[in-house]
Amino acid sequence: MEKIKGVFFDLGGTLRIAEEIPEHMAKARARMAELAGYEDVERFYAMVEERYAPYRDWALSENKECGDYDLWAKWLLPELPEGKLREICHEITFQYRQAKGLRHVVDGGVEVIRTLKARGYKLGIISNLIGEYEIYDWLKDDGLEQYFDTVVLSSVCHIRKPDPEMYRMGCRELGLEPGECASVADNLSRDITGAKAAEIGANILFISPEKLAKKTITDANRPDYIVHRFLDILDLPILQ
Figure: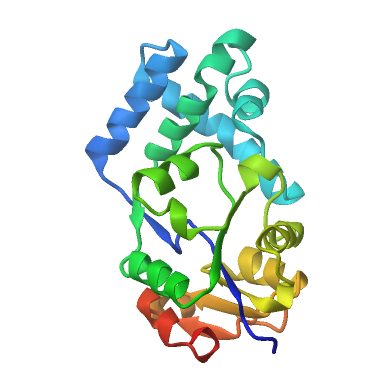
């Protein structure tokens, strides 16, 4: 194994965790309806959810992702005028994600990021998600922007993991070979298989023992390391 010089983090379920807070989620649904000009909040949200299902099926089957405007113009609110959609597409996408829960950094996440940066590693984010601006705004608001040398989002590059090209993009932006990088993620079928296909040097699976017990590990998705606490990443021999 080559010496690891860079570390990529997945977001949802890895570096960021969504907490279901009913008041927060209801406020986001109401804002979505307000932006789109609908009075019946729950009926509007149910319509969006129904339309999102085939979009999700398409995204997963094709390993592709739409940007904010195309998501709403082609899939979720095609009946709205182009001008209106361009005006609201970024905020309504953000509110749609907020309607699923309030996201915060996983326990130990900030300490891991700061410590690895202090040890001299280049850091990056590689994540599948909708929304073109949320992650950049979050990094700036939480004071984490300075720690990351690259951010590769499916909503911006329009491809999704397990497409290995997302990892290759990240490696190019770090100026490193895939074998010089490690990946920290929680999903065997998307994250681990994609990173292995890109020949990432080390794959670290972050998962609870309960979830791991329900998974099937094969040669195609086998991680190099498994951690149950995020802080345990700092004790891995490859990241000393």
